[in-house]
Image (tube, rainbow, N blue to C red):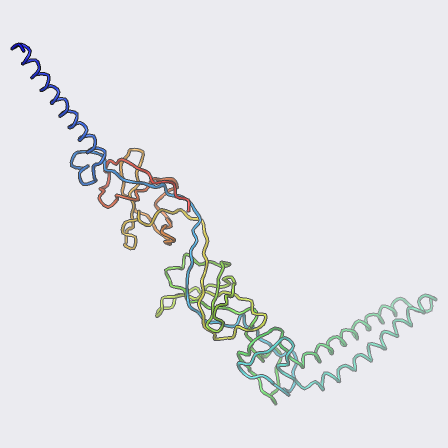
Amino acid sequence: MSEQTKPSRVGFIAGLLLGVLTTAVLAYALYYVTHTVQKDARVVGLPVPVQTVPATVKVLHEAIGASGVIQPGMPVILTAKVVSRVLKVPFDLGAVVKPGDLLVELDPRLYQANLSARIDYDHAQRQVQRLEALMRKNYAAAADLEKARAEQAMAHDAVVRAEIDLANTRVTSPVPAVVLERAINPGEITRLDQDLIELGVLDPVMMVAQVPEDKIGAVYLGMKGVVATDAFPGMDFTGTVAKIDSRVNDATRTFGVYIQLANRDLRLKKGVTGYARLESTKMALAIPATAVMNPVGDRASVYVVGKDKRAHLRAIRPGAVVDGMTEVLGGLDEHEQVVAAGQYDLRDNDPVSVNRFAPWNN
């Protein structure tokens, strides 16, 4: 081998080694750039890698649990419609009554005597018939017939009033109910419109569930409620919310939610305890709960990635948290991209590189 050939081969090998080294350096740099973690990205001046999801309007299903007690439904107050002496009050406080049960019996004799008005009515009716027959023969005046008809109407009204008064001497239950209060006793004399008996309706009944105050925004009239009771293990009673208390109990920090339940066989008694599951369904703007920073503090916030590819810190107003999703009541618009992973190492206005999560539609 000549002396001229040796330096040429050495130069070739050196060039080859330099090329390999350069390629390795470039490959490492490329790998480093594509795999830079957040704490390193800011050091080398690269965008901070994050993952985002869009704020989306979706259906949120939430189950709210609360213990409660069965109470009668709406109260019914029965009053005196006639003045008379009380003969009987068969039921005492707490008694369960059925429709048609006698609750108060009054002395009917005065109103039985008033039925003599039927005699006057029969007479007035015959008088009208006689005058109508004479009118057809032109033997009676029209004025006499009109007067007779007016007297007949007055006599009929007197009969109707007497029959109603007599019927009102027996006060009966209009509904299946429990006696909550009685304000009259045998031997007393009633007054017109005096309260006699207060009933609590037993069909339907109410489960008064004590719901924690942080669920105020999730409860609404008409929502479905499923009730399980200690008295009937394994059996559910389904109803709807008919009333919501306007005040929160200072001691328990709960408020009453009244679930109306059918009770045709009167199995559910006043005072039965149980557990209610309220099923809330609503459309709401929502984001993953993990995207929210300081979710229970004074300033819940998220990072929003704008068109400028920078992360902007923004305060939001969070609502209910359901199945890992946080309802957003304010601070975000639909479709805005929210950082759901990597937000805790971000700073406001950081440039970011975005890797979006797969669409979430559950």
